[in-house]
Length: 382
Image (cartoon, rainbow, N blue to C red; front, side):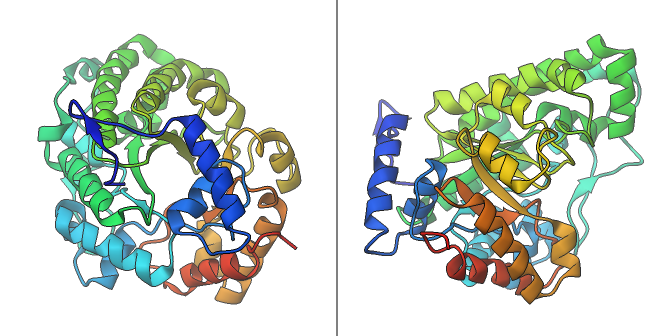
């Protein structure tokens, strides 16, 4: 929000106790009046029942289609990105602004060569990785993310979205986890081999990256965003083992999460891997919410997920992207209805795709998710 006051140049935010109290008041208000998106999301995050289940679409670069800009312009022009996000939020009825450009933002500012397609997501030049050999890990140097092209753009977009949101919408920043950033500069397969063969060399780079990311989330928090989402992609069975994740990212991600929390902002996580390690991520980062695409590795059903983790963290998800691409609107509404039925009672649930909404997919299924939240997500859940 843009309404946080400043004292001695620093934003003053409500304490967790104040937010919890506010969430309870919003839940009471919801029994008689519809809530604003900010109120709805806050109630859900603090495990209260709002007027209905909130919905966010994680429609990133795809939002550019609503304003007619190219993908490259969305990726590099902050004014164009903000206009696209605002158009998407209003058209699709999303309950939050989020500031996610793509997963290459941080790597690009470390010096990774980028490719900017006109109609698809920006990505590293995979034929020319910045880190070509294990000896290259010590090439990375710290820098001020406020002065760089891509991270600097994200910071600017966060400030602009916070002003536009006012007191109506929550705003969420974003930061790729240190191991993910490194994978963008080395390649995931080569990085995982190096984690086994040359762990100390990898850790030299992770220390440098973490210092920059701490400064990056600090700068985002200072724009007025209400929280920052940390993407810990590899903390899943489809990524690396539990022990390796703890050693190669857990302790670094903890430092970043602690910085977000120190600035009074909400800590949220995103993990679209298969069978994510919820317990480890909660232990290391103590998040307020986790966005996910698959059941945790220690849960076999949505019911078990709700029972085991529903009281510890707000659940954000988890309509899978392959369903968005393969099912029609009626089928997506049924998927959403089943998730709402299992995960929404008692609050603590936000309906969303399990990962980025496919950038060139039709918007009908996004609209179906909004409709499902408004029809099936009314509290009390029936």
